[in-house]
Length: 332
Ligand code: PBG
Image (cartoon, rainbow, N blue to C red; front, side):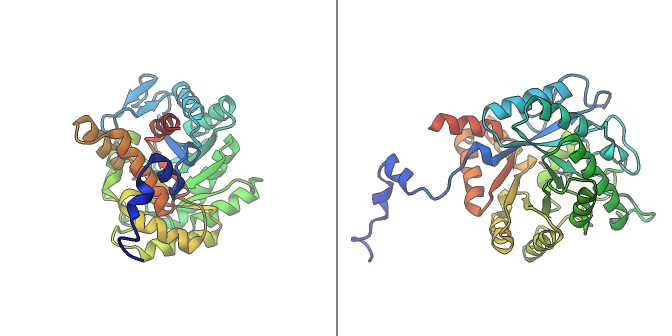
């Protein structure tokens, strides 16, 4: 039946009708807030909270401030936090990453103790801990040695689990890391800790503000030798299927906004829970446009997060998580 029998506007007439037929929901419990925790003595830890110039309203946090931030997120119903560490010292191999007294391990313990009901996810990677800023150990020729990196990542994941992490999330893009981490976790008694694999992680310009925040820009070269080419969608699905085969419990697409097609494709292909990472550059764009008066921040953020859910994301990692949770509570 066509117009005039069919009138699409009938079900749009009132808030009640729109609510009745809304296809996609967004709940605070689906959101994860990334936190940058700086070790005392690191260049970035002179005070409890240090603003990040490229990410308005996101701070680098001391241990105490990170616990406060986690408490605030939990009070708003946010599902979890994703921890990134800024160590006091870096070295060639990134040994700070698997130090049981490292900053992520300390923050994990402190947050789990203060807010046991909030999920703590940890980013498993070496780039914040290596002097060269790459996500693995370097070979003589400057390339990243895939196989030599696997053991270090597995060690890091186990150290996070020992500190109490609820999920570990490898973001390095080495081949075989999910299997290596799964086997090490199982061997060390952490068979029940899930892995959220950054499966389709692209070499993206949208990570710019993060690298400033975490002091993790590569000292030379770029990450195109291990992160994906933004032009490749089939490959993203293949990456996700491989990670699923290696034992990933959840897979991620990152960045999120320009990759909605792949959120859907990865979801269809794997049938696993999919996380979308609404990354630093996506956050910075919205904050800058809102500050200039070009966009309504609240409406824009809720539209973006809802669109990621519509694309197929079960979980959304976003620097907007606290604001969004607050706005969602106000709506009902
Ligand atoms: C690597 C890592 C990065 C991000 C998360 N994990 C940076 C990179 O790959 O260069 C980016 C997150 C963001 O931009 O918000 N440990």
